Length: 247
Image 1 (tube, rainbow, N blue to C red):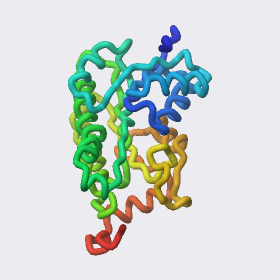
Image 2 (image 1 turned 30 degrees about the horizontal axis):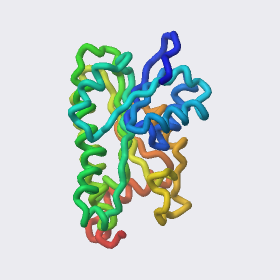
Image 3 (image 1 turned 180 degrees about the vertical axis):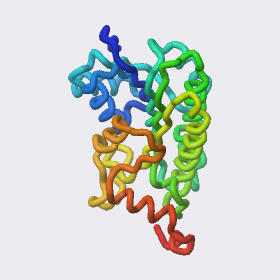
């Protein structure tokens, strides 16, 4: 485990820190001098990544976190070495739609990781009135959650629920001047999408998405990439009869 350097700066808690976007965010946050608490089930993989790929590794500490183990969330938050200024929820799990239709365990796992687990831990964090330093919560969602489509509606429904939760949380925390953002991302070149037949022209690099996370502004919905902004707008307002023709 890595120990914090004795410096006065902001602390970022990244939940689901072993994802490719989260790893890129660790690099970018630490390059700016932020301390990072990287939380994941894959602590050994994170240890290796930080040692090899994070020059400012003294700014990173690693904690075990399981998004689907709801009972562990309160103890996890209570024992953090310090409470965060910024929280990033990046935990993810993908099951092919056809497989998810036949395997409820896989579908349920997506529901747990993308929605129920997020609500569980973020509620705990948001309701900690003693943490007066909390200023921002960022959730990594997906364009799959914008409209229901026959090729990925189970995965998409979990991301849609997460986005709507964040929208309400943003309003709930407005009086405390805590900003809530959602990153609505398109196709990301990552280990989760490896092997999928996705259009190369639409693939985004994890570092590009991480840049949107690290530099999130005051608006709620952030859609990285011009092409994906256009697709997001088209999906949002497309008539149902046209959506039905999409894969």
